[in-house]
Amino acid sequence: MSGYRPGNCVTLLRCGAEYFPALEAAIDAAASDVYLETYIFADDASGRRIAAALVRAVRRGLRARVVADGFGSRYFMGRLLDDIRGEGVEVAIYRPEPRWFNFSRHRLRRLHRKLAVIDAATAFVGGINILDDLNGLDKPPPRLDFAVRVEGPLLADIVAAADRLWLLLLWSGFRRREPRERPLEALPAPRAEPCGPFLAAFECRDNFRNRRDIERGYLDAIAEAREDILIANAYFFPGGEFRAALLAAAARGVRVRLLLQGRVEYFLAHYAQRALYGMLLAGGIEIIEYHDSFLHAKVAVIDRQWSTVGSSNIDPFSLLLAREANVFVRDAGFAQHLRESLEQAVANGSRQVESVRWSRRSLLDRALTLIAYSVARRLLGLIGHSDI
Image (cartoon, rainbow, N blue to C red):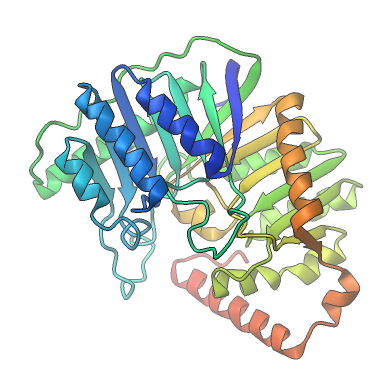
């Protein structure tokens, strides 16, 4: 892990309604360089809004770079990325055009993190794709998600992570002998002077030096918990060590609550996750399902002091295969702000899973859960993972 750095400014952004105006304003205020990574870059109102800001930056003489995942974006982006490339925005696709029949660990290693760096002085990190809040929904409220705006010494770690990926793409393109209009040189040196009160760490997950850094950040905080753990996660399918840490916390008297996806967005993920409910409920862990909209958050608050916002789900895809990025913050004020948003979601859009009712659920629900769990375990075995 890179470790905590003091002196940061960290601002919580809830959903695209707060995130996209902040990102657009930062791009429009940029003086030299804009860099953006995303899993999905959609050709919709929000995507076109950010694309237009990138084009405006190029027309002012700035350098604008975008990295989008080849699988995550391919069904959403239409011609949008080609159009902004024609305007001078440099676009790189991370692992383009994966083939479903090639079910291998290599092909499943995706770029899932959502990150932007403006002038190497301001960064955005979180779970929000360049995608409309209501995309896939027939009515409000929007999907529940979070990001943070970061300034200060933490920029050194964020820029370093972005730079490593950009140079990796340079090396990959060189091997394929792809034509380039201009070289993929490194990002500018970070401007990371102290500016605020927050003690924060930036952790990324890759398949090289940082395989378990995000998971370890969670596990360390859970091990230190003495009062309260509140985790909101869209796709929750943790391995044995993570489950054991939560159960151990509950056993020593910590209140453990999981705010999870209540709507069926992806059949396999939804029902495989529910296969773990019986074990968790029996161990004293509270499970709350969010039904008001789609839950896309990957956040947590522990003991009203520690919190995290990022792109990493607590499932094998995020913890074992994908490139992810989370910001960890040790600050009571920031933790309270995030906690209030989660408590609002718990109170107004969620239903608690009761142990008695769960034990009496229908035979159909039991069958779907068993089938999904069996399929998920089989798929994980094919990529060499069996800790479920």
